[in-house]
Length: 461
Image (cartoon, rainbow, N blue to C red; front, top):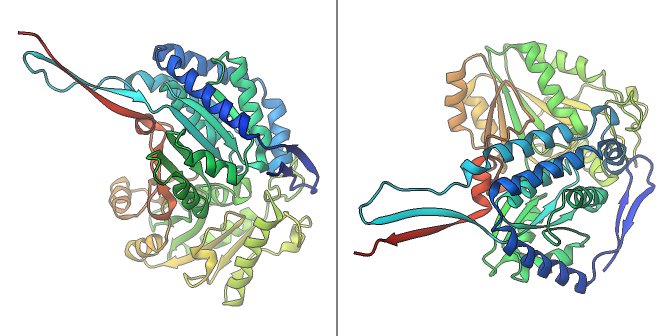
């Protein structure tokens, strides 16, 4: 067992070091969660929801501490203000919709019987959260799980280890029953052991495909349910009838916000031949305005990637594409902070790309995007679906009916029209193919965290 350590991408300093839990502490946490959950499940939904609003207030109260902590841990510029706006939107939506989402399902009346399906909590939910949106990704499951009557154990990524502590601090201020929510510091081996112990009823994991497969292996034979959000290579298609300036502005932001480290960030763009040259020109001009630098500086609009190894992956993909004939449109020398061997990486737009290049087929998760010219809808559809992933796809058009028709044919979890890189809490967040399984958010997210229990009550004659 080793300490979990956060090394800052800013300058390589050690931000935090925490010892992993002892076996005894893990057992105590599991037992405490089970005990607390049994009583929590009997608390009315309205009261459980009220606790989550109190938790939200406590977390919002920590935001001025959280913003620089996030910059230190994973490199997002402080000018963007953290994640609390999205957290607030999602928590409040969960609270507002919980009663309806968790209500009994009553079939048509049948004389002499009372029949209904009740949604009951699963029990203990383990959330394994990632570093890229460490509050938003975690809150997607933590809050609805608790409102639904479950206990929650949180294992956060080492890169954002302080986030787990902020969740615990806010939950404690909300006055949750002892043991109902617990932040645990675990390594990969401990996580696998906990999942395989049979004590966990549901695992929600956000991370790599390899990590998702490891979770599935660990859970084998336990019959725990799984929610897995894994890799992505999200495409955008700019149609002939698109509002070009609007598309450029939003797709550049969708590709480079958070240094491209977004689950649903834009990683490849297919542009109708009518707009191709103007789109590339506009995207390059806009991207050249980014300021790469220390995320603690208010002037910085593009921070470092969260770790040197991730920046090296993007560098390798870009180098391979260039060797195969791709064209780079931005000079890294225009971004002085870009240096080999560091997490600082200049944004890059590539053309003359194709699907023989890893930058167009493998997840980049960094500040690079490839742009291809297409003749129309059919070619765009073929290319968009030519991927092992399917989280979101974005269509830029003025025709809603066409967008819906194309969306029906795209292999993806979410279809956007004239927007990208956003989670609507009223809609299910899900994916297809190697992007994973299960869903969070919306009414369906609540259903993933409960099991149906049927009541078939016959009146005495």
